[in-house]
Image (cartoon, rainbow, N blue to C red):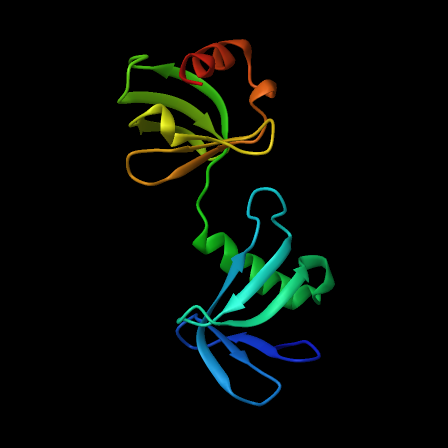
Length: 157
């Protein structure tokens, strides 16, 4: 069982997080939510109940005891899926919709870009690309991509 000064957090028999507040009330099905998942992934994490009510706030993951941090990080990893594009291999067309073949930190993938508006600029030099299935692909630094990838990307920006 993981404990901090004001609450406890543990998994139940079904693998869901259970939050027990200082008042002793248990909340089943708690999820951690990052306030800034790209800009500051280890800072500003809320523990919320299934109805979206915030139960606790974590300023930074490093302030948590290791066992609690591991529990929160594992839950975040199971909920979040945002592959990072390392290289753009090819695009089927420079007109949208367009099918892209990319290399990500999780292997090669294919995505369908519906329109240029699905490429969102993040604080420079990052980009977030939403494919037709709602999966978000991150380009952390578009200037760090190889020349071929940058050339393709420039045609869509």
